[in-house]
Image (tube, rainbow, N blue to C red; front, top):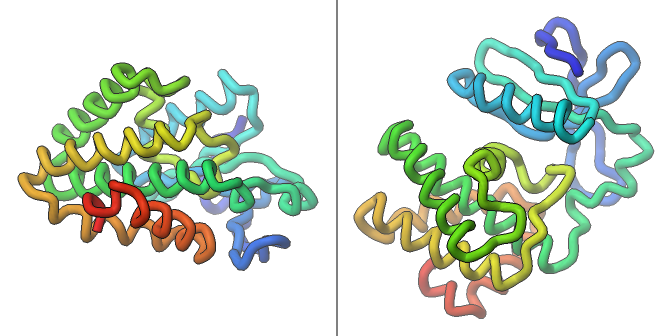
Length: 220
């Protein structure tokens, strides 16, 4: 829809009506947009790909904001819609999916930071293979993985249509891959802090579920 510069827009934040959370809001010519995803300056191609996917393929009204240090994608919303927002009011399965994606993003970010972009790209392919081999619904194409590692699941307009068993499988495979890439299982101690992004109630539910399952020993 729009590709804009920082000087073209006004960015503020408002209190979410149902959550203890500030929601970033972008205003442009009387239209309101909320943040969907943020990319580093080096990820211009990924940012444009997500923006095109949302606008061209899904028919969403979106803004791609170009700034010196980053790119961000924003989706149009009416402020009264925030009260019906599902971004933090998911049921248990939705919260498990959100936590799982945050851990996936944490592993991806650390691989990219410590091992380099080439290893991060290989990791994306490995995750895509997991999706394909384990028959995850609507999650096998590589571009789907790219979207998962770059889009904040806490404010994404839609979560993957997974069930609890998919979350268990992905966390098992994610631990296996992380251990393979880093050479040991110590990576979990740093990655688990990614869950701090979740609202306290959702984070508590996810960690309790994690610790009560066999996965708890892997992700301690």
